[in-house]
Image (cartoon, rainbow, N blue to C red):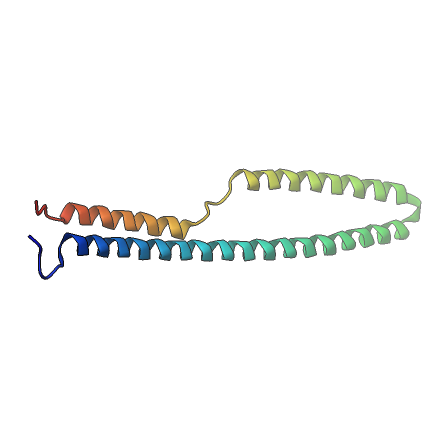
Length: 133
């Protein structure tokens, strides 16, 4: 009734449960690692973006102040043109941001790929397993 080498049905079920739990734990650890990496990447991108915007904003203000002082008679034209230019740039950046938010990158590519590979291997093992009943 029971296979002495394999330990029988109960031992096989225990080995299967242990394997499934170990696989699930590994996948959860991988998912946690991916979440942490994504969080750190987003924080870094946000900080770099803020630093870029601060420096670009200060440079733009100082640049237009220099132009307005250099061409004092046309200062209203220079300041008005600069304001329109920045408004146009803001509209372009807004449209670009909307496009970027509309197509998010799929998260957890590695986790999904590993789970699909696990599923493929389990299905292959089920097809190869002989019926002992």
